[in-house]
Length: 255
Image 1 (tube, rainbow, N blue to C red):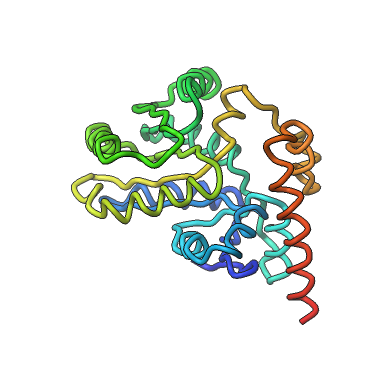
Image 2: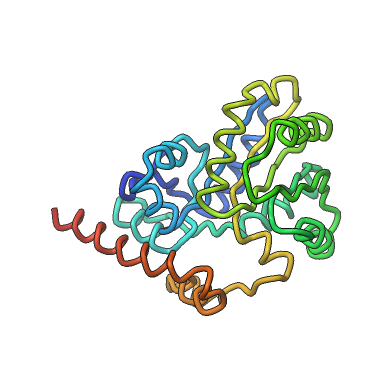
């Protein structure tokens, strides 16, 4: 799969529909296991100071262009057909298509009660969506016992999609390390398993946090909307990463 290089991170230059199609192509392969990172400026900039996180992104099955800056960079890199593949929208699109495909979903993430509320909202908005597992993980690494329980749950339910809502870079580290630790997890399955790191999509679709208006998303201003909604949690992220991103890109372009 081709990649559009953004400060060392290989972004998958694709349309939204291609992202959905490739997700279902992956889970149609018996025994396949992989992960998808939904990446914008935050993920790219966190990777600048963390070689392991950079490797995790570049080893992903797909690195979708979650923010408009990733799309603009893809256009500049010679991929004019690239569209924004926004995590919450991708999650809904996969969920909707999975109804006819009879695919199964497992939810992993959020704070207390979020996965239950999210599952209820998805069943209301999507319809006959098959959510076969829900786990609210602790705010720390899983113990061996907790990890083995998750493996047992996945083996029992054999979902096609595992949705991980832990925020960047925690969710990327979890997905990569979990699959590396259990390489034979899906070996006997008659389909594949694809993990998605979708962060705030859990809170958005559970109705707990407002999403930016579409015009702000299309203009690359979603970060400003989210900063206004959650200033105490997000101000350090955006005030640090956004200026650094612009500066590094300008330096690269100017040689």
